Amino acid sequence: MRPTVLALALVACCATGCSTGIDGTPRPTPPAAAPSQVPGQLLDLTNWNLTLPSGSPGKPDTVQQPALATYSSPFFQVDAVRRGVVFTTDAGGVTTKGSSYPRSELRETKGDALAEWSNRSGTHTMDVRQSVTTLPPVKPEVVTAQIHDEEDDVIEIRLEDNRLIAQYGGGSGDKNEFVLDPAYVLGTPYDLRIVAAAGKVDVFYNGAHSGTAPLAGDDWYFKTGSYLQSNVSTGDAADAVGQVVLYALQVSHTG
Image 1 (cartoon, rainbow, N blue to C red):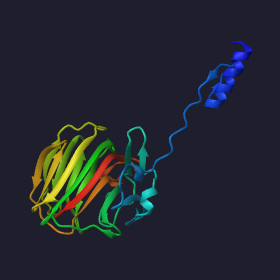
Image 2 (cartoon, rainbow, N blue to C red; image 1 turned 90 degrees about the horizontal axis):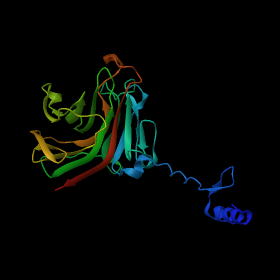
Image 3 (cartoon, one colour; image 1 turned 120 degrees about the horizontal axis):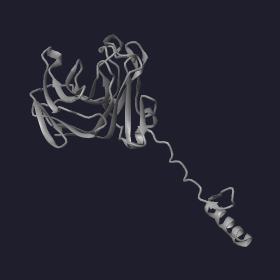
Image 4 (cartoon, one colour; image 1 turned 180 degrees about the vertical axis):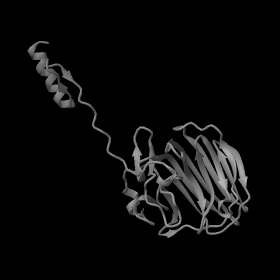
């Protein structure tokens, strides 16, 4: 390149933000990194709070709104590649008073109050798109979504090894289940819909109706995230984790 041409190229380069190599050849400047995101930028978390596997025994940390809108941590963060929110729970994590298992999990609210509703009237629906990416090796189980009441779970969506199921009736001691996917592959996104109405709960998996739980109750609310079903007493190491990625989340209440 002649000196005059090189000089003109360098002027143009400076104007467009590129750099030069050791031979003086103009080279484009790498694009600026995208600004870091927090989960509240991908999901509408207006009517949710978050329970974490950190804190003190029986009193896990909880993140409420408005802090949740800008909150991010190793337990709850954006995966820029998957374009989803990763919920991570370690087997050695803190548990709630009523559970022996840790969680990184959203709990439905209604503004500043805790959400409570009944499927004896109206229609209550949660739609999520999610995937399970990691399970602990000894007891590979995690709950990815559920309806809960004041005392116990009503119905849970659970991955047990590679069986993705809906399980209910646990509070009575007699568990019932129906299978959503008998051979789930880790990392595979799926669409899940839970509809609680007319004294029953219907579950849809990838658009198909998977089963009905004949359950009616009050003081119910939705939850979703990574509710690990393992701890150190089951044989998993304290740093063994369960990870669930949430790509989309929507809840509606009508009637």
